[in-house]
Length: 395
Image 1: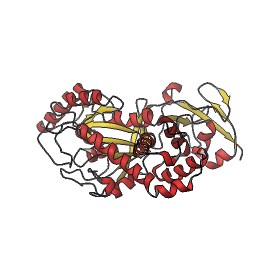
Image 2: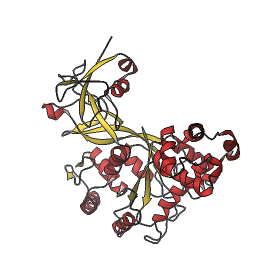
Image 3: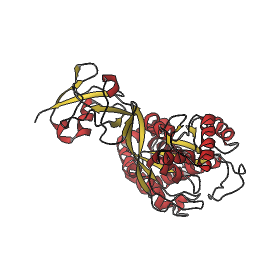
């Protein structure tokens, strides 16, 4: 699973990426500070299973603090997009190709209205960030449409009148954008094109289909950044009313970055996703003022919002579930307690879990044991959040 972070230049997406991954990337006040996509590891926050058994875990990756487990997620910071990207403006085609790999997107916008469509600084509040939501979706829709229409007449001639062959041909064409045949069929049904021959599709039909397919294959959360700026929260609430079908969450990436840096230096005690922090070390007067400001912002928006954004895209948008490989003793062969926690698509079965751990375990699957309920479960048992599952496989 890969989460792509996207947005126009100077909206704060690289700061968000830095804060979530502790990566050393350039975050600058000018367009195209990011040229190549940066990849790093962020972490979603889940409830650890170990405390339910009176134990403390030993994470192999991530960490666990007071029963809050942080599970790794791959995150990619894609260079800033500008209008006309699908036509190659800026470095648009290269950037859009990078997005091909993403399973879901976090669209970072400047909720303060302090950057224009090109990502250039303007007077705070003078630009409507709702334009950025519309422009990015339009760019992505045009990208999908361009892929669909390339050699359209040839496609129409090739496809027979049977829906099956038509669906297969469209899937092959759109597969590079992450579309499966089930995605294509669902979008055809949603747009009323299920039984319509390709030769009867007009321009509006193509656009409608591409938008539906894009929404299905590149689901998105809008991260309304710079919510700490005066007036920004009013803008966020206005955007939520204006775009009721979008997930729009306020955040302040800069405040999160300040806290993570302060926590790393031992100045504060802070757990990502919490609504407050505690000063535990010596800080200068300047640092104290900065932390006081951060605290006031967190009171206003309920934390920094950054952890919520990543958790939302993984669990609410992508509908992932998390589970722990384990046994009655909860330990691996080295004596580590619940060292692993894995994320899988919602609806995944115990057999899917076995294959996720290792293909040999999946191939030689015999049965599984639900440690929480102390019962055996079959290969078709659907995983739930926090399950602890022991897989039994032949040698």
